[in-house]
Length: 357
Image (tube, rainbow, N blue to C red; front, side):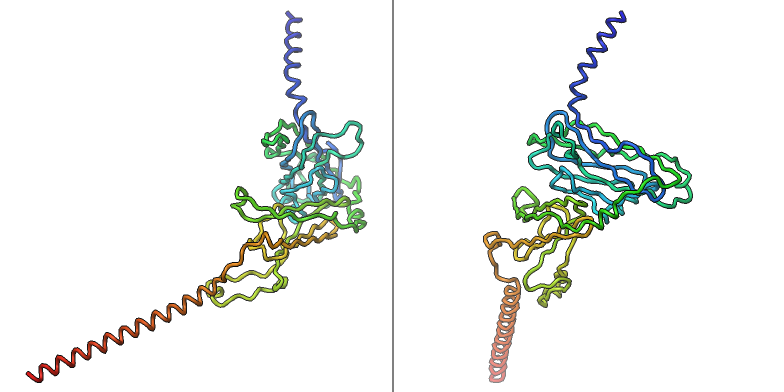
């Protein structure tokens, strides 16, 4: 009887093994550590694939924001090349209030796993720089000296099968022990100071489809920074007659209707980016800025064949409307004057006939 139970258990394990081995594993490295007040440390987010390939990843990192501060999200060595949601340093300030970091991106052509024998970090998604606050007061200081950094429920990966199939995913976080004294020091500040290399060159692609963004024109762009990683992208749409920070001149009727055009200026944006100027008459400028503040600027002038056919300015229709209206008013006044004159003539004729009688 015991032998039969062991045999059944063995068969059950083997039946489960395919499902277990096929699961992708998203994990943090190191999986544990000890740090003290003022210490900075890096957590790498990595993925291991056993079978199949993935092309999209969406992540949610949960951390105790009362005990740790997220300083930076680095992607310099990331296998993700197209980022839809990459938290900038400014966005991480919001994460430090909620304790949640979101990120998502894609891998064109797919990622099929780390090449056997590769000693590098070819399976890294991103790196988060955390810091233990130098001073904790009140209830924060009384909390447990061990905290967890984990993946949230919104963490998913999708297969590169052309159908967007969600893959089976296992996750593993990390445990951090907080000491009373500083333990180590990360050379993050030194890395930032020594980075004088701008992000890699890139191109801007103009796209349009009736099935995407209601047929509006949009652009895509992406690059990498091999030193400290990309922090953010900034975009500017500006016409040749405009200046940055200066409100463009507006015709009087638009001012009356409150249709003033705001002053063109740089704005932080994610990719893809829907163009504000759908007439494609503006120069499009994109800046890629790394964690050290180095910039790579790329400009794009939409080709003439992409630009919409020129139409008669709406002010001409308005001027025509005013002119036409004025003519109608003159005609109406003339008709009224004519009717009154005829009425007076008829009245005088009747009066003359009555006097003769």
